[in-house]
Image (cartoon, rainbow, N blue to C red; front, side):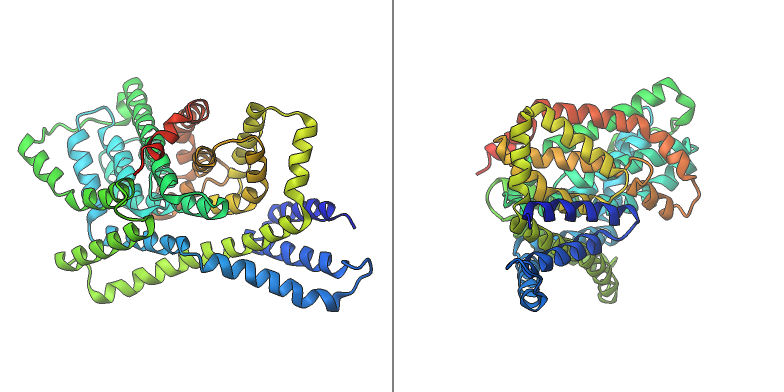
Amino acid sequence: MDLATVGYVSCAAVIFLLAIRVPISFAIGGVAVTAIFVVFAFRTGTFMPERAFWTTLSLAFSSSFDLVHSYDLSMIPLFIALGHIAYKAGITTEIYEAARVWLARLPGGVAIASIAGCGGFSAISGSSIACASTMGRICTPEMLRLNYDPRLATASVAAGGTLGSLIPPSVLFIIYGIFTESSISQLFLAGFLPGVISMLGYALVVVLWVKRDPAIAPRPAEIVPFRQKMMVGLRCWPAVLLFMTVIGGIYGGFFTATEAAAISLMFATILGIFRGLIRVRDIIPLLRETMATTGAIFFIAACAKIFVALIALTGLSNSLVGLLDNAAIGPWLFIAMVCLIYLVLGMFLDPVGIMVLTLPLMIPMVESYDMNLIWFGVVVVKLLEIGLITPPVGLNVFVLASVLEDKVDIGKIFSGLWRFLGIDLVVLGFLIAIPALSLYLPATMN
């Protein structure tokens, strides 16, 4: 029995199961365990299931056990909990309020403020979906109250929410770093400039859109005094401190990413309690939400690790590298193929699922072209970011629609997003063509 063939059939089986809407954890985990059992059962040339049972269980449990007990993986619940605590402690609202006051006089100023608020929340939470959900509660009703066009009011938040994938800390960068054995601290720093560029690109979209059609974003008549602007800005000090703890601490070599997450969570919790916005009994529901999200991510990642074991067992990655060598595909064509694959998958699957499904196959091919894994990680996360607002699934769109309780039709949200998708593709092109945008900060890291 050809082991590579088992690997190819297993990949086809996973794709089929995903196509009929089987959850990705059950699809990749179930196929991986079954295929590993088949490989061991036929090891002697005849089918001997009694010899495969315990070996399969041992391989599956050891693979998932090693992942779940990874020290780096502990960052995920810490950053997710930080996002919940920061919202409850009022830190998120203060970011948006400051941006709204300072940017109010710009064309579409409140929409730009929502994007800036998303960027600020992204620097705390690490989750795009949490960012879209939280900022949707804060920003979108305000824009609708000010008679903003619903397309602009919702699309700016849905697009801005994707910044949670790129601006550090990022759950996707953590998972990527674990699966590729790359430095998570370097990945965080690598995502910072691309995240800021994306945020500025979204703001540019809003300005040009409103310049062309001023009626979609009425400009407020009131002029906020400079003194009031300064007072509102100064109230953002907790968010600035959290950001400096994560990015400044990692960049300066003072903390590891995990330590930065723990310190930030402790500070946000103490601040919330001190302000009287968080009571002890409020912490339990917040932790329950964190555990639910973390459990789902961990289960997907654990099943993916079993799938990685199957790929190693069958030698599938070596077979794919060989196919690339025989086809004489150049690096630029390979990157174009990668972009196409991720953009298509992004239309139907969630980012974590896409990442754990594709990385075991992609990384050996990337290494065969001698590409930088940190740079490739930024490109992958940017592609996954695009998938969050791409129809027909577009998770951020559906999360935002559920937060708004269907006050705005999903079709309207999607109709406003094509402009943001256009700027995303432009930024993606820059990230691919100019690797220094991703690699400059990690190269200067202490």
